Amino acid sequence: MTKDQITYLVFGIVLILALAFDLGLMSKKDKKITIRQALYQTFFWVSLALAFFVFMWIEKGEVLALEYLSGYLMEWSLSIDNIFVFILIFSAFSVKEKYYGRVLLIGILMAIVFRVIFITVGVALVDRFSWVLYIFGVFLLYTGYKMFSATDDEEFHPQDSKIYKFMKRFLPLVPHDGNGKYMIRENGKPAYTTLFVVVIMLAAIDLVFALDSIPAVMGISRDKLVIYTSNIFAVLGLRSLFFLLRGAVSKFDYLQQGIAIVLIFIGLKMLGEHWISQWLSKNVQVFISLGIIMVCISGSIFYSMVMQKKGSLPDVKDESISP
Image 1 (cartoon, rainbow, N blue to C red):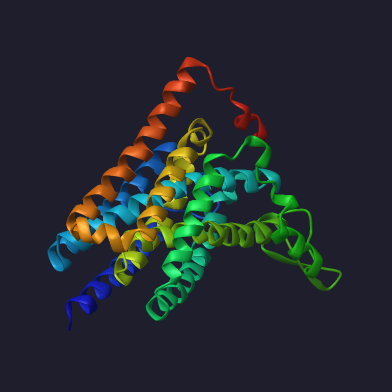
Image 2: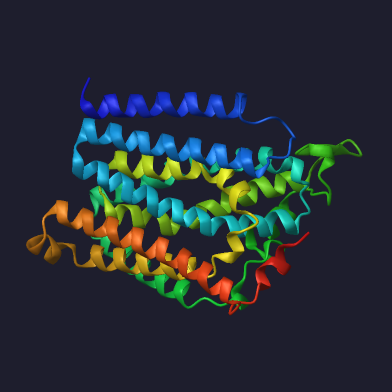
């Protein structure tokens, strides 16, 4: 077996065992997840991702391992931004807390399938048409600018979204959770509950976020293994991160700006890669990317916390998501 095949095999085995462990031992059906349990689960998924980083370093070398770590941190920070939208969706459809874990799990597993398809298509396009990278670069610049300048007036409203309107138009929906069921029968005909709607919306919204995150990872690395693994590890940890941060995510008011700066940096890097490579080695580029990602994300979170303590930021978001 080649090194690539061994690495994919190890990743697949780790993934299956981790999901079995998470589902069988760390999660129970329709049970509320406490902050302590969420902390343990988050530690589990982050430790697993970092352990794979060590494995990548041993098997594939320093450069690819650091590219994987950069990609994972990028995806992980974007996941924090996703959580606020997830909270809005749960609140808008009045999902009971005991169903959170199950609904998130199914939505995230669907999101992984969609991401694998999306990544495969994206990588194939870049392999065949290298100029697609320049389109991705421009797209990241535009996305970064829009994200940096976004205001609270542009807040996402789940029931006004095109996804929900599409489901409402073509599917028989009922305005309740069916006591934990996704589909029920009314008057002898199938009807879909709010839990079904939320699952589909979680997967669809994550796919929308993937339009930003996957090009961003491709701006960090062209290696398929790095792109796949960094994305999947970050998405797998999203459920535990949701329970850990759902009460605090609205405090990270400047995280969006930090992520926006990273996206703009990666977009510029993609557009100027030909000239940058003439001046800087691959190793140096990877270290610079990793450093900028870490500084921007940690700096924006720290700055948000400082500003919250000073009381200069009104806690508007908490009011908008309260049940």
